[in-house]
Image 1: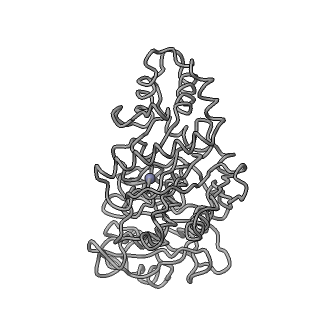
Image 2: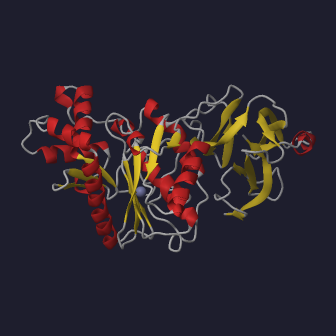
Image 3: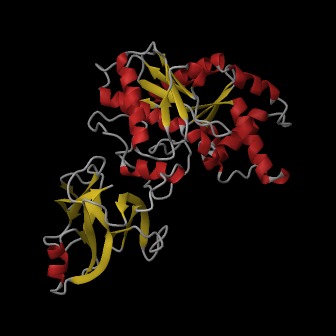
Length: 421
Ligand SMILES: [Zn+2]
């Protein structure tokens, strides 16, 4: 769900109403899931199967049972005011967990979070249909959103299809005079993407800038692919390794922020997506892993150096993709370890090697190869320093200009260190 403003109680109620409607739409048209529901009615021998499933879902989503609501009319669970899960789907998940954990361990649902992501085959062929009744604005938003997803070059490939019957995700319009822009659904138990995105057509571009229309579709597709809200503290979900507990630049935050219109995925969105749907990289390109600790930031292509975090360093995902061999148009990015305990990266041999003859630190080798100017598809690696001169302070590098912008928190922006792949 993507809401126009910060959540309020009123908004949550509005959200609820829209979600119920979402299920109406889903149930009406998805006859196959209705028959699945009927077939599975006797699956659970417990008298209070709703309560059993609520317990199960609460554990699966690491949330409180009270956060799981059941709408009896529509026969679906509402999780965290956002995702709608038909009871048939909940039962499939439940059945799988029982099968996986044995008779006496029916509530052992560790790692279930992973099970509601898409499987590889589904991820590689996500077909999307948008109702022709939508305005051109929303069709454009969908097209550009698909472009953003495919631009990640992750294991997720999204294809727009004109034939509704061929689509795994159907984007349908709905009008409601409230602040809920859209809702998306989570993947089903067998790893297909969530089947529905419902968009509130109240939000034309005079109310919602077209960048936010696009971001909304990117966001709802994120739900369909299994991502929860980055800022959804009470919604359950499991923190993805290498990502922080909050990220104001995440496209998966629940509400839009009129003061901060995102240009697309944040660094940590990319890290999170890569965790589940990793991009397959050519042999000469690696992730440029990022760590923080001991008062500094550290970057390496060799995950064996610090793994998921070691020696006082915490893993922070990766800054981007970097060449491990010199390619046409690239130069070495030299790595140094300064006397003050800071890792420093530069493409300028004089800034590094020349001055390092003065004993400011140790040369540690070539970190990777980068472009010195913008080529198509390359991402600038922005360089910051908290000190007055290169051998004082702490150097920080990011491809996410939003993190420190033109400088913040004592860090001065020093320009682009190089362009990553
Ligand atoms: Zn959402």
